[in-house]
Image 1: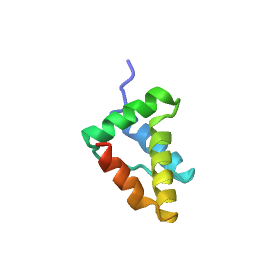
Image 2: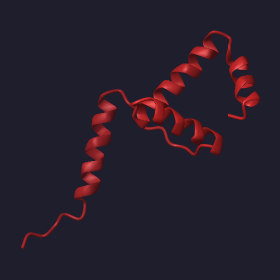
Image 3: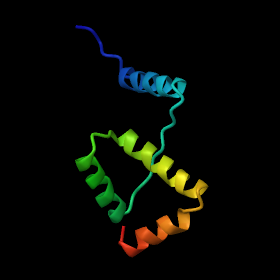
Length: 83
C-alpha cells in the first residue's frame, strides 16, 4: 500500500495560486453585507459570470464611476435603494 503525501493538497493549492499570480491575477477576500450578498445573488442569477468575474466587473464599474466623477451619484443610488 502506498503512503499518501500529507502535503499533496497544500502543494496542489500552492501550484494553483502560483499559476494565477503568473497570469497577473490577485486573490481578494473579505466579507460582504447582507445587502451586497442579495445583489451578488441576483447578478449570479441574471448572468453566467463566475465569482471572479462578478468581483472583477464590480471593481471595474466602481473604478469607472470614480474616474468619471460619478462615485457620489453611485453611492447615493445605493443608499436610496437600500443596496
